[in-house]
Image (cartoon, helix red, strand yellow):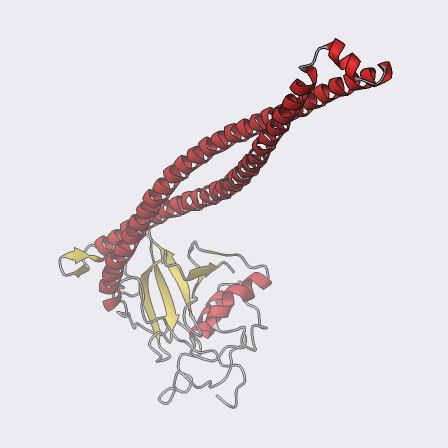
Length: 379
């Protein structure tokens, strides 16, 4: 490994989502005859697929409810802001009412004071006006003094009346303003009550929606556990392989007798280590007359890197297997490369490969083509 810079090794995923049967490329698959307990592989795969459909549906429902939860939470936040704003207005209105009440108290006190002044002035006026005009005239030194007294009495009378009228008008104005503020407070309180009722409705709906979302999430978890149990049944037999021949691979016997999965005993024309999965698939592509790059080195040649390497070369990559495509299992540090020999109508495929069990040997397997970490490169 220290002598060869570009080594490409296999680290196959520990869990493979399919049972494979021992079969050579020349033998047609018969799935109904392969049983796990009383269930066929096809039945188990169908159950797993059905559970996945239910998982997807429940996830979609939960996600939709999550969107509703977000919307309701936003609406409740808006209502909280409106409630806070309305309460602020109510507090301001109550303060204005208190201020007006204080002003009314002052005005009523002033009114009482003015009434006192009025009583005093009326007494004085009565004393003065109680004398007849003839008596008032004769009691004055002259006619001018008489006129002045008369004017003074009229001015005193008007002054008292004006002062009293002003205080009464001020009181009426304050009472009107207070009534207006009290009406505003009543209106604001009604608005607040309506907002609180709406908020309660939204909060109740939010709690209900969150509960429904949690139910769907719980259903998803339960279905995933069921699917996991089924996949474990399949995975328990997933390492069944068919070792028949060498697949005509020209370097099938390099370092025979002392070959190990972790050493590189030379590179093929495409820069891959002999008897590794990537070397075999590179040779298969080239042997069928198609272009296989020779520059996938310095780490680009690891199986899991073939997807991005192919895309960088403009080579199509998708999730749909076709005979002659290269299947890349993208799990693990190195991944695993396989050659698709055939694709069947039940969603499985026949693949050929090297070094599946870290032994540098040729084998074939039947795998489902629908795993989440499978990609297909169409050279």
